[in-house]
Length: 512
Ligand SMILES: [Ca+2]
Ligand SMILES: [Ca+2]
Image (cartoon, rainbow, N blue to C red):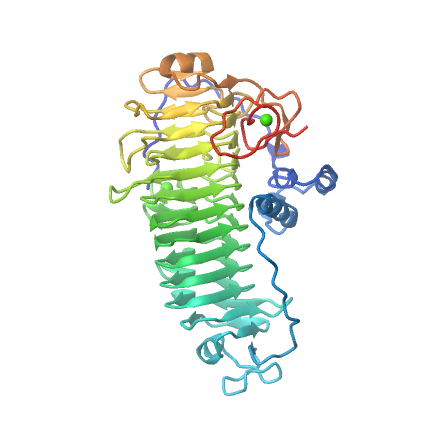
């Protein structure tokens, strides 16, 4: 989808440009550690990342991931632990591959095979295939119950092929710890999981693939966890029947090339899927591709196209071309999207090119308890009709903080079932495009006053225009301080427990 939907609002004044260098220090870290106890937060803050460290996914990753996992664990029922048998050095279910090996060998530690493909073809079901350091040809897993894993502490690179790693027509497969790169073909991918179930793609580096880092098509219960996914045309794409897909803990950044003239530069794309999908606790940044012609950029953190039943929560996104784009070709709606407890911010590395959410296909959907800071053009562009539009009936935008950027850009003809309320806005104070306004409303223009926006539209009658009093917005710690007007000013739309007399507005609940 192209960026055709941006309205051309009138009344833009001169934009004040401020130094944003400081804002990049520790980007992605401060918000990461705030779930941790005070002491560890201070310890992490002291690590004070150098300029550009935000683009290094290995820095500060552990603290944040731990925090996310901790918060998830609180709400997740704990399974009864099963005793794990002690691993032995070379059980019958362990096989080895080495660049010094031979496919006519036994596949043991001392007599390893040469190719991963041979191992995937002949290893007994239930095998763990340990690959020693080196560079290998692409491979396909077409049999159930296999784990392919890099030897501990060794770098295993698999490169080339339409699909560098293909998992097809099988089940119970794990691919872990590999560097998967350089698929050269249009519509190819680093990892492709197709017509399979119970597949885990974990801890890999997946990069420089054309067109996808990971593509999941018609495969259920696929988990994509803790990977670094970068420099592909698109980071991850899910399509078809993908019930139970879970994308979590990944670092998805600088997927920065177009696939075709109309798509590319996206972090996570969910297109024409059926079944519930969970996208939780990822970090996404720098996902933005120059158009193939005509200038400008496409892409963004999340793209949803004719897909429903998505839960997108606890993610952190910065410097992406947009936070989310929704759309459809009319073949299916985008229904029951739940986008909660995310943080997204600018300013981006390209002036004017870090926008918010394009909601033109989002029926019966909830966008709540998110915090946005310094986004260009808008946090929420809400449209009825136009290119790629589907229904937005029953869309609710509630309990969000929109800071240092224009909160809304609204077209005419919006449905009466649209709810926008209990949000806190604070425009100004950034160089974000249109950042000094609260909203643009078709037929009215721009306003810098929430009261005027309420008068024009009837939305946000319980909203606030005030300083949210974050702990340290420039340091990306969007926790509230004790005097924040966002405290207890929200409404319960998520069923979560809260502190005080009501839910707070924005990503983080203030706990005295
Ligand atoms: Ca797009
Ligand atoms: Ca509260």
